[in-house]
Every structure is written in structure tokens, then in C-alpha cells.
Picture (tube, rainbow, N blue to C red):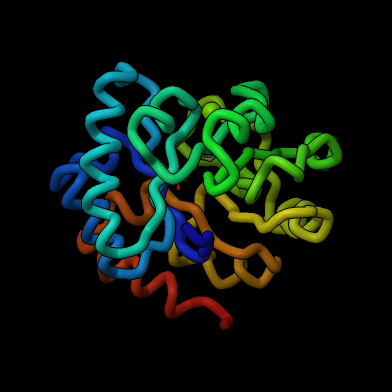
Amino acid sequence: MSLDLSLYLVTDPTLCAGRGLEATVMAAVRGGVSVVQLRDKHASDAEMIVQAKRLKVLLEDYGVPLIINDRLEVALASGADGLHIGQGDGDPAEARRVLGDDALIGLSVQTLEQLAQVDAEHLDYLGLGPVFATATKPDHAAPLGIEGLARLVRASPLPTVAIGGLSLLNAREIMASGTDGVAVVSALCTAADPSAAAQEFLAQYPF
Ligand code: TZP
Ligand code: MG
């Protein structure tokens, strides 16, 4: 499946639960979300595989890829389109070997030092952040700010998506850094109308 990073929704079991995770995700997708990442730090692998398989069927009609956070076994067993790993979560080359050439594999990068170590051969994109401090990920690294983000975008050998504290208030400025897209949890999952919010994100972009 091709990769359009423009509006990348990362799920959170609590923040997306308002109207039900699936209903929230699909409303956002109808509004124009281009990638969905299933992220759940507490579910068992078996629970996550069930959720991933259900989402995969729903997303198929929209041509939107489903990416699994952290868990290679879940990505493989659910037939998801790819895997997103953090620094120290796993090896991109191993993920590529297990998931195959067509899988979409992403890595989180927080610093120029990490960027210099990136195994671009086995990756499709980089997640850059957090741009701003966010309560959604309590253990996050030091925020990059817009300037820090722009430096990483310029130096990246791969397409990038920015994450962390992003919202309708800063999406235009974020896209002006040259990144290929914006990744959000709360800005879509806690929106009164996730579909309208997704449309508003895309309407802000300078392209
Ligand atoms: N990785 C870096 S920040 C973050 C993740 C998963 C959470 C982003 O959440 P929000 O609600 O969009 O700030
Ligand atoms: Mg991780």
C-alpha cells in the first residue's frame, strides 16, 4: 500500500474511547486521515490482534494503511500494513525481514544523533517528535520545537511525519517546516467531530 503521511492518526485506548475507538477512527478517516496507527501500551497481543484485524477490514474500503505500534508479532499476525517502532523497540532490518518488502515501517527519531544512525534501507518513514510537550505520552523526550523539527526534516533521508502536541492551531506552521505530514492523537480523538476536524487539518495545509 502506498504511503501518504499527510494526516496520520495514532490511536489511544482512552482518548479515542469517547464514541468507541472504531467509530472515532472511521469518522476521522472519512474526513481525510491518510494513515492509522494502532497504539495500545496495555492490551495483550491477542487483544491487539483482534482490534487490528477489525480495523484492517474497515480501513480497506478507504485504502488507508494500518500500522501497528511496537509489536512486530501483532503486525504479522493481524495482516496489518506495517509497524512503527521507537528507539530501542526493535530492529528495522528484523522488522523488514519478517514483514516483507511491501510493509510500511517507521521509526521514531528525537535527535540529530539518532537521525545519523537511521537504517534508511529498511525504513519507509520517520516520526519526528515530540514537537511540543504533550500529556498523551508522559515519558516523552525533550520537545524539539519548530526549529528543531525543521532541522531534522532537512537532514532526514526519508519522508517524515511530525508528532507531539499538534493541533489545528499549529498544523500550518508544522507543515511549513517541510515535513510530509502531521501525526496526532488528541486533536482528532477528542474532537467533537473527528471527521470535520480531519477536514480542517487538511484545509490548513499550504499545498
Ligand atoms: N509520540 C511522541 S508524542 C506522542 C507520541 C505517540 C503523543 C502525541 O499525542 P498528541 O495528543 O497528539 O499530542
Ligand atoms: Mg514504542
